[in-house]
Length: 122
Picture 1: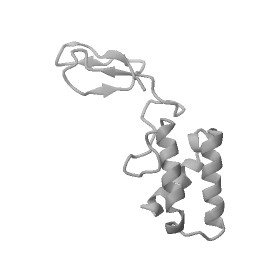
Picture 2 (picture 1 turned 60 degrees about the vertical axis):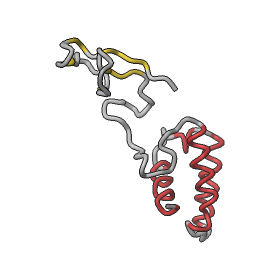
Picture 3 (picture 1 turned 30 degrees about the vertical axis):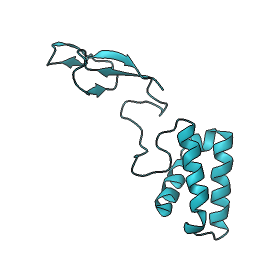
């Protein structure tokens, strides 16, 4: 999986708003790995460093980490990519439907009420 992790790192480094670029500790680790790649290190030789960076991202609350399986992708409607702090959820709490808040109200046709604004917790 290290080649996949390296691909995700490359994508994340390209995003100026990403934690890989904005967090000093994470950025230092990421740049160290990039320097080693430019110096000829293979993904296999970087496995421990990539895993450590992945763990650092996860501990810092960046759920995407370096895994393509976790699917690092901005949510539609999330604006500039900052984490969504509120979502619209089932007003009856009976299903897992969530929607991004928007200008137009979103209704739940099961409960026949507007979707409820729900604050996400970390």
